[in-house]
Image (cartoon, rainbow, N blue to C red; front, side, top):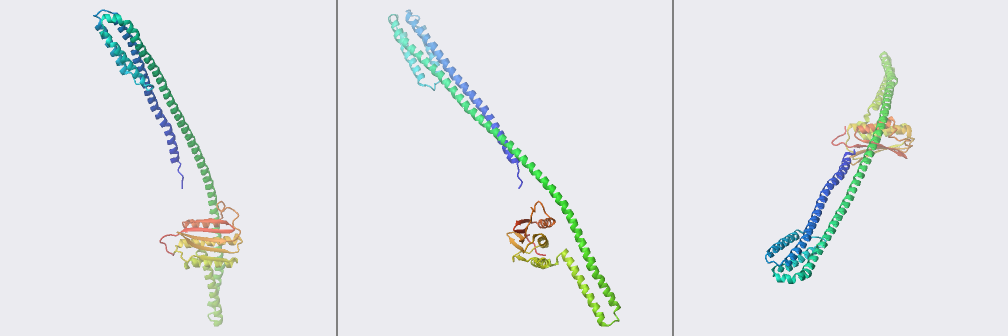
Length: 443
């Protein structure tokens, strides 16, 4: 199965781009969030400081109004001081309402509000004093009532201001900590993108190297195949010429001579018409004998071209071939064929017959075997043909160095849609597997 590299590379590149793109989007969002948080911190800090500054400025002014009122004994100016007191009180309460709630010490604002309310309650009755009461109680009121409360209020505003600065620094520290965490995450994402990029690059280099190596191997295999093809073509041409020469020699030397002898005998018979019957009969028998020899020779040549024994079936053909092999070589041979074999087409019969013929020829020439076994059996949906001998086997790798016989057997197996393998060890095993065709019948 061909391996496809582009899905892996696409996944790697997509992951790398995602690792680059997502941190970029996250950085933009983080920057916007940090900007909003910093603006909120600054606004809260400024609002608190402005409110505290306004309160700290208004409280002394309120003290001045009270002091001036107590020291002014005229009855006509009381409403003016009362109005100034109301305006300053309203301004202070407005600033208190706008004062943000401190998360560091929320009770500080409540204590400030309580102190201011107590301060206002203490001061409010003074505006109802008569000139004599103001003359008598002004010094005591300013020293014992107003000053301590005013200083308490200012002390609380100083405390709130300090707490506000602490909260401001702490919130900035939290932002810095968050920024550090995000920076580490960003560095991690960048490192992962870099490592993934390196991995994709290495995988690409390895894949390219593998493809180049495979291309070189295929090129070498193609060159070997071309060399084998040229060699095979030459061998086939020589084999064809040898076969033609052998057929020509047999026809000329044997058939031709016998036909010449037959013609001479027929000529002699024509001259012996008036001779004694016994002499005529002898020449007639000789002519019949020569004709039978011609028939056997022609049948032998025809059998070599297309074995007529195949018409009797595969088992009969292989048994005939095994007997003929044993008679020629003296090597015992056996044939084992399963009884439940399906009917096979003519192409299968011819291919299996020729493969066995070539395997026996190789055994007789090269193996020095003492016995040969021919086996045919059915395995699942395949037909298995094995030719096994106990000879010396092959002294080379048959895949890289093959003779004409092995190539011919492999090609016959391939033409029938099957495969051939050679098992070389204690002897040699030719293993051919052919798919059983569906719906075929023996020819």
